[in-house]
Length: 132
Image: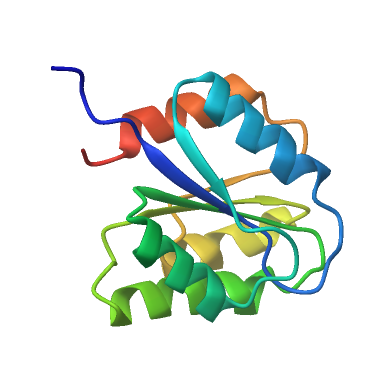
């Protein structure tokens, strides 16, 4: 019997309209054998959490460029915990200042990947950190 495929929700929270990076990540995760659900642009934390619970994902990956990561990422964590889905691995990426990363990790974001992070690094991190 083959082991369960990792299911990943790739989400774009907030108002930014650029999703090329999210699509590149989604394709890399698919190429690595993961099932990927992409929510599309301009998702609220509530929409992201609802999709994550409904799709029974192992990972939520959020990409943001708008600067609202300090509000939106922790809100997703809070809502996941509220829905009893606090065991979902949550990672973030995009344009996030280095000095903001400790607060995001303290809020429950497992890892933050900046621009130029090798795709293999993201894939490996998820493979090694998902609790299957």
